[in-house]
Image 1: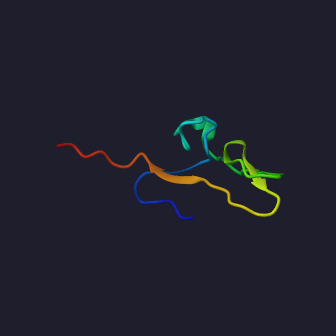
Image 2: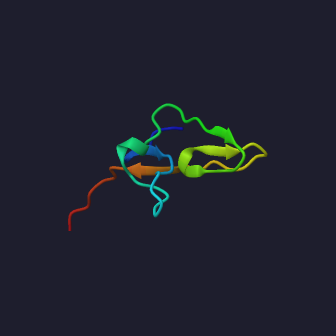
Image 3: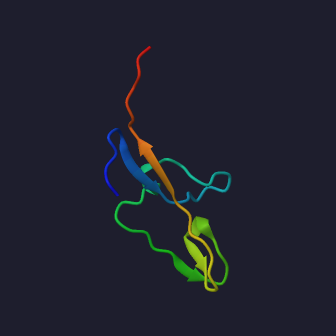
Length: 70
């Protein structure tokens, strides 16, 4: 992926909070890699994917865009 002209790209994994899928905190940023464990059922909060297939989720965000002064 090429770098954007403005801002920087950050990828987030799901948070472990019950009421929120994503939290934009450094502890949830994916730096180099992410590992999901196989399980009998899918649990995105604990990074577990069902052993019969399923889905993984993550969010891509462009942070630190330009500021516009009015």
